[in-house]
Length: 362
Image 1 (cartoon, rainbow, N blue to C red):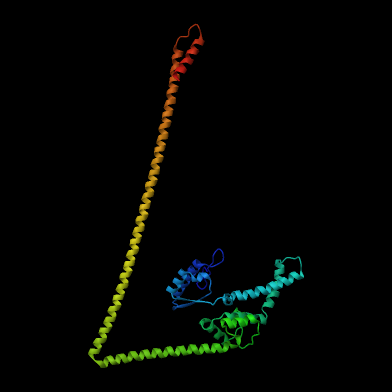
Image 2 (image 1 turned 180 degrees about the vertical axis):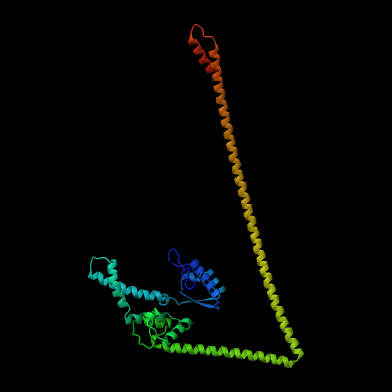
């Protein structure tokens, strides 16, 4: 989302996410993970939508330490928390609107009607039984063994219970008795192994014990490693110069191998850069050749256009010259006739002579 680094919403024109928008979202997410210094691998929880199994998406996830965990089949709705909660709210509101419609046949739901029906639906939806039902939906979607952040949040809530209004979520206290809301909850518990509300406290205690055990094991492992290093240094001091020389030789050999690896990596990087430069050079040559051919083509086209205009100009000049000659001949004939003496037989003869001269000129 623009202006925020904590929320990312990827969309498409048809409202469905495909492999392209998913890949862009993962690239943005990985950039944020790297900038924040989050340790990898990172667990990526997702449903089984087809875009998640695109080869480019899988290659990007594998190459950047994103461990994809796909929910089991037919569990998408159980893990989509907002969909579960909003569906229950929509159901409550739709029932209130339906009841209003039956009580007011033929009338439409206006803004005033909405303002009256909404508080009624909200009151019904926020009753304690609805709060418990929403909490069950949330618990059915929790992956208690995988999501450490949720476990820590639940531990904090157990230590200092907050009201649903303070939380902004419909979460329940673990010491309350949760009413049975039907077979859907039991099915979710059987199929997905979700955590029943009555056993939440015990599960949290076990999670705390498990984390403490892992921390103690890690601390012991660090102590053993430190003791091993100390013993090795003592053995070197007791073994004398020969053992120290061997150790130094081993260290030198290790450094030499590391230097060779770095040199090999540098050589491969140089070869890769050279190949890329060669490819860029060839691409530039192809582009230059294409530009040259386009220029030649344009030049030929201009030459053809110039020759065409030249031919048209010559034709027009010839036509104008012919017209000028015709006019000159007619004018010359007229001048000759007018210069002759007009005989007494009259102007009729002169007019016929002019006509004959004009016909001869034509």
